[in-house]
Image 1 (tube, rainbow, N blue to C red):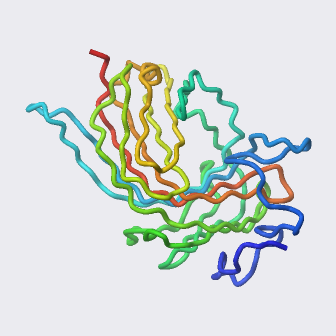
Image 2 (image 1 turned 120 degrees about the horizontal axis):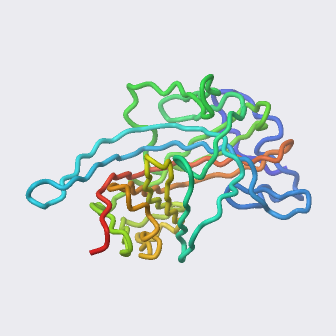
Length: 289
């Protein structure tokens, strides 16, 4: 058998049956993010439990009277778990590592009230427990306001689920990424290339997302890029041209992530967990000059 280390769930003093261990002839998870093999052995999108442990910087940049952008910033933490339906969204346009999606409502991702039992995140200053929400699709956590951070760079910690009606038990281990040092984006121009620059590290991936939304029609546009943590990506102008012009603001998300992936036995579902440091900024959206 090949198993994840016993330290993965130290506070439970047990291992979750069937989670994290694979027979010697089974290499373990075989597919990519949000996928698992079907009956024909081909990897395909599956319903996914997404768990994100995030240390985040939120900023808002506006146009003051003197013409220089003014940005206000605050820091926060969050632990989120949401069951998400297998993705059927098709991009309107793909350029390089980035794709443009148009959708109704807040997001093309569709959450559902899936049950994975209790989820426990084993942080250095004590575990955090998440439980299925009684009034929504995503989980509620016992994350206390007194916490100011969740992890330090290179911390190793566990994310474990006891299993429920929709998701069997799982046992994953995450390594915290380095802090994210990024050149501030202060505006997005429709139809113009948008460079995103940060200080590179060896994290698993960097995800860049740009969103706009028309409240009146309840329509949204989202550009998503998943790239190596090399320090920069440029979103092509043909993609930014697809952002909804009736919205005068855009949100730019940059997420540095280390992840772990499980294809638990017993159900055709996937679990994705990530330790994330993120930078989110709300900026003016402008028409091309």
